Length: 115
Length: 111
Image (cartoon, rainbow over all chains, first blue to last red; front, side, top):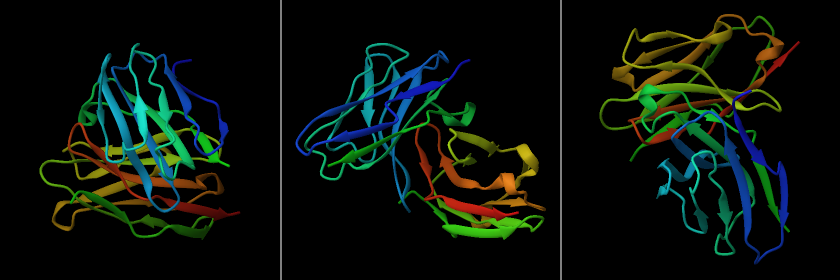
């Protein structure tokens, strides 16, 4: 079955540590996205990538980094510089970067808790 | 500023009641509008979308939404809800490469 796989589902991190969230898709989609979901704030865009080896900052990129070395993979690193990293993280992908012509598919999310 | 506002954060209905979830947006230029749904334990998935066609859009599971350009609104409706409609609903607006989501509305349907 085609889809997006995020791992792990739950992640605990100590303050001051970097942590990497995995996102893999087998939909052959060009564009991939990372969103952060906080209660009462909806989904906020962290980073997006429209093509391999290219990515752009979203609205809340500070304290995060990404890479896009392969079409199917878009890992997100939450660095120690992120002041409030505890949140639910969602990865998404679209066939093309223009949402007017495509449908977004989402992973099941990773819940990160800083302890 | 670009934004999406969903009026209700929590809605509780009994089965067979009618549903209307409000969504208003602020976004310059031509937009496309979406409603996504997240059932408990499942992925966020597309419920319906408006792409410059008939302003009344039909989606899956009996849902529909009406785009009213003059009011910058895209409200979601269903005539008769079921217990299985219990979920979180997100309105989103896209101008192409940037998509903005609302804060979400949690719907609980009592059996």
